[in-house]
Amino acid sequence: MKQNLSETCHLFFSTLSNPTRLAILELLRNGPRNVSEISEALNQEQSMISHNLKPLERCGFVFSERKKKQRFYSLNKETMEQLFKMFNYHAKKFCPTEGKCLTTRELQEQKKKNASNLLYVNRY
Image (cartoon, rainbow, N blue to C red; front, top):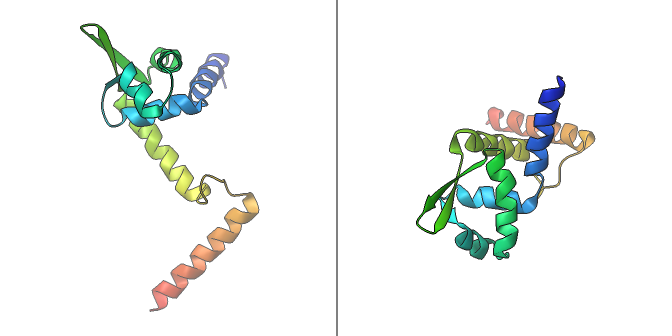
């Protein structure tokens, strides 16, 4: 991997590794909001929300638009919706037990179980 790409990937994933930032992104899937609305919805201080919006905006995960005295943030749906779809797919396949990811052994056992269920369903 080229050095520039690894630096970009590091910034990308380190920005997403913060639970507050992920909660902001998930909230913005429902439409644009200002800092006060985000703060209230996530039950966090406005300063904490503002602090976490900066890296999200810097990386292009969210966009901001000033309307009078307020700044509204919206999700970059072009890329972030694809990322959410990928996360959902991965979580369903590899982390089906309330966010606990399966070990290699557990994954193999689940595949066997799913295969035997398919055989049972196809018989009848």
